[in-house]
Length: 308
Image 1 (cartoon, rainbow, N blue to C red):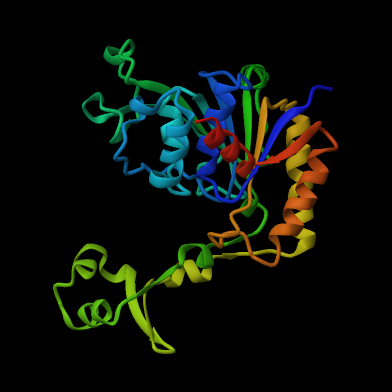
Image 2: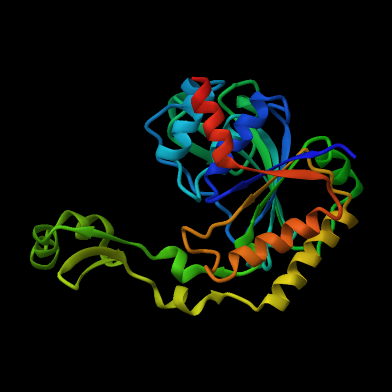
């Protein structure tokens, strides 16, 4: 059995760098791959780019810098689709909002063809069929209870990337969405006393400030519905979910060209007291159906930065 490239990352935006590294090394195809995205979250947010994706193509150092300076943990998939890397995305989630097994055909392109501001069309525009700035792809929503058709299995196995965020197995949305940053007393006083404070004007009720132990902090506010949506589960349920994913991969004969696993522990979406258990159990069970040697993304970063 041929060893499958297998990468572990801390946060999910690093997948963009991993995928581009794999293309550069000839581990996966440059275009027309299928992404099997196993995640509690879609990660389909448009990035705010200062750098054109067209200007960094083929340059791993620049792609590495863009990953860590301009992408967020939710905005890395669309840039890869725009590069032409994926022609199909399957989002596997525990439960979808009344969209299970729905497939959408879409096109992604950039404003004025500059490769910075990405945009989406829900219907194929045949007039743009030969425009290199336009990339067509399909988006499919699935759970492990669904199965792929024989045509989908044949198509996806030409080059499927198995992308797993371990918050799929147990998730703390409230912790992941919350953050705080220390600020000066002047910034604190301005936020409290100035009705026209720029942060207030821009972000409204999504933010607040607090004083604690003589220090001042800017922080996000956790909506009540987010606090109520606690998706953390027991270790027994985690094991059941991992087993269900393994069965899904076996039944649908998924033979990935590359596997990447995201911890999401620093962002807080994977509970801090569970991430190690989830990762170790997942890696152990994946090794029962695939052969691989885990490599941490930091090793790829070192290699790319040293070679520059």
